Image 1: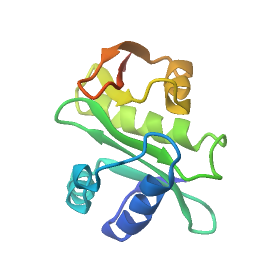
Image 2: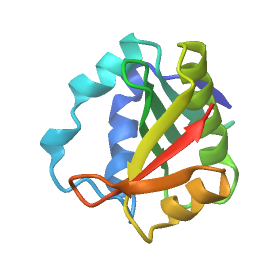
Image 3: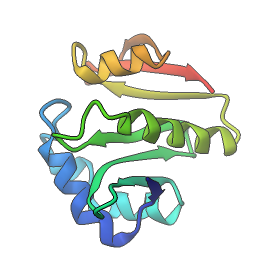
Length: 138
């Protein structure tokens, strides 16, 4: 089930963020607990919580610029529709905030790239960090 994240979810969010095999965060100063707290305060960070209480994924969207800030699913929980559901929730929030289009970046050749393409996102160039820039009409 999807619910808004709380501050008590932050340790698990970062546990998931650091456990992924692709789109790894090599510089921890780029994504901080303060960033997560800001998204929680904005009501723009969601978690997928399993029936046993385990948080298995999270997503966040940035209403300021229409971007998807994060979408990560814990290893072992992939392929269950969690990422798709969390991405839909993040995009719905951007649409509700008045955005007509969402955008995000991800590593070329990654499973995430295939996930976004399958979900109807369109790649359109590379970011300064060499990541694919995806866009989708909301």
